Amino acid sequence: MANLPDLFDPLRAPAAPPTALAARIQASVEQSRAPGSTFAARQLIAALGVVLALVVGSWLTYSFAGRPPLRVDLFELPFLGALARLALLLLLAAWTTTLALAPGRNGLGSKVALLVSASALVAPLHAILSAVAPLRTELGLVAARELHPLGLPCGLIAVAVGLLVLGAFGFALRRAVPAAPMARAAAVGAAAGAWAGVALFLLCPSSDALHILLGHALPVGAYALLGMALLPRWLRP
Image (cartoon, rainbow, N blue to C red):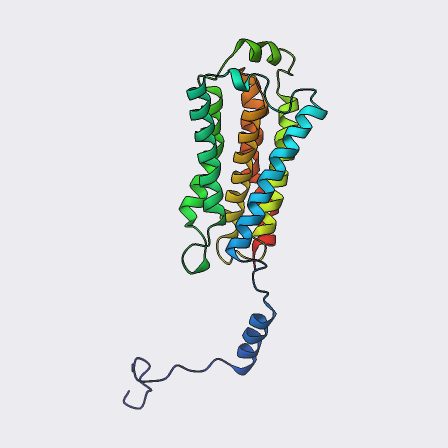
């Protein structure tokens, strides 16, 4: 026993890795590409994507849905009620976006629990803010009668707006997510859905629960799954 090496000697230097393993690790590090953009650049790309998506959503509403580029009763809504509802929807979108884009400590991003919570909460919170005690006006009720009861026009607009935001956020985070890419991808998708929800509030006058749930909340909620399906490989370094 006395001749055995003392493997627990704190002064004993750790054994060097095999030469072949060390060479493979070094080659892998050298081949790994750095993130494509700084955090400031990511924020700018994300902001431009949101603005472009909202403009495109407004244009689609006017050109293809045959409606005004903003909801016809926007200026007839009760001011404080509409302002509070819009502020909460914007807060939800901004919160999810911040979690999705934030570099976090040591560049590892937001905590996984926060990313998962944001991904899971966007759809139900949007549904509550949109379908519970919806804002109604006489002009909005008249205009809503011309909409498809299953919310198809709004669903298509939500798809267009959300895809543009998803693409912008994914481009901003390319090769910049070293940890938990699935959770971050889901949060990016949820953020895209949240911005689609903001657009729908500004564009659609309907207060019908079925229309809101199928044409608004369902597409908004689908983006977390879409982001998780499409983005992880794109986000990893």
